[in-house]
Image (cartoon, rainbow, N blue to C red):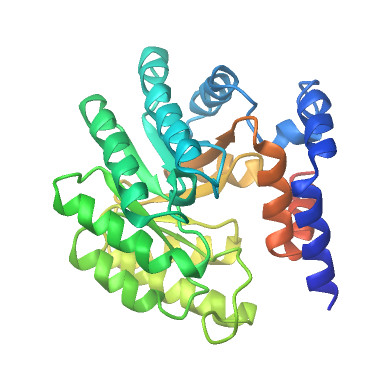
Length: 311
C-alpha cells in the first residue's frame, strides 16, 4: 500500500506543470545542483561537455535525449527530428557515437508503424557516421512490439541497432535466445517498472537469479553484451564468469547511470574493464527523474545509498 501511495506521489510530481517550470528554472541553475548530479543538462552542449569529462576518465557513454510517451504524431515527428539533429554536433565534437532512445518517444503508443518509420529514419541518418543506437525497453505492454521493430529494422540491414532486455520479466529467457540467434546486441538490466506477478518476478532474489543466469548466457554467446547494473555482487560474478571462460575484457562492457556509483565506474576502468555511462539530457529531465523514482519507491533509497557509498 505504501508503494502504491509513493508511486502516486511521484507520478503527480512528474505531471505538475508548476514544479516542472520551477525545476527548469532553478534545478539546473547551479553547477553543483542535485539535479545535475544525475542529469547532464538541458542542452546538447551541456551533455557534450559532460561526456568530455567522462571520456577524460576513460569512460564511454550513450546519450539519451529525454522524452517519452508522446501524445500526438506531430510530437513523435519532432522527437525523431531532434534525434537526427543531434548527430552532426556529436560528430563535430569528436566524442563517442552512441545513442539511446525510447520508442514511445517516437509514437509507439500511437502506432507501431509510426514508431518503426521514425526509428528507421534515425538509423539511416546515424549509419554513415558510425553511430550505434540502443532501443530502451519500456514497460511490458510494449515489449513484443519493441522486439518486432528492432528485428524488422535489423532484417533491413540496420545492424547498428541494439535492444534492452529486463531480467525482471518472466519472458526474458526466451527473448534473450531470440536476440542471440539474430546477433542483436543486448543491454541487460534488472528492470525498474512495476509489473504484475504473472508478468514479472516480484522478489529481488528471483530477479537477481535471472540476471545472473542471463548475464552468463550473454557473456558466453552474446555479441558484445552490455551488463547494466550497479550491483557489486553481480559485477563480481560477471568478472569471475568471464575469467573462467576466457572471455576477454574487450568482448563486453558494464553500463551504469550518470551520477550513480562514480567510484565503482572509476574502479572498473582502472581494472581494465569497459564502462559505458548512460547520459540523459534535455528539458524533460524533471518528469524523467520523478518517474524513475516513482516506478519503484526503492529507487529513492538506491540513489541515497549510492551517494552514501561514494562518501
